[in-house]
Length: 229
Image 1 (cartoon, rainbow, N blue to C red):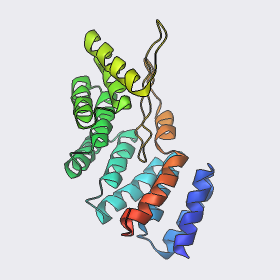
Image 2: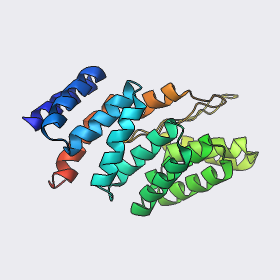
Image 3: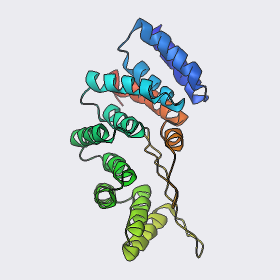
């Protein structure tokens, strides 16, 4: 019964009906308050409808229930940042990195955060580590180039852009500006377009995508419930 409600909630979110999804997750969690998938997907859905304070309660609970789950902690960090709680967000980003130091996505995630709080050099260092771990990550290379450009490292930025474009087989037109690309992963961290600062709502829309709900439903079955990949 509970799993069925959660699955229906996920389907509602995949159809962009996040309020309905929250209602279904609420029903499931009334019956089983510590249902992991219910909590996680409700947190994401609440974020989509701009109820960040409520989402944070779910993310915090998840982080306590599964303190070694870098996905939960990483998303908790992003939500904290979006709510203006940057000191605590930094703590959670650090925890996620400690849990998965070889995961390039964790470095890219913290780079996003560092860039948004004005720590360009720190953000660049994190993107460099992400690229070191995954040299074929075109998104990290592209975003590293944008930060290098912003910091005045023009030659380095051109090299990063060229590497990124080569990986994806893209040839920019003469005079065309490179734009910061979004991260197509389950816990996608949003990227701001070149020369534009994203509003909090734009960030929320970028992070908590319907594809994320679909991806996490499979992640839940395979990882949390102990099933093999």
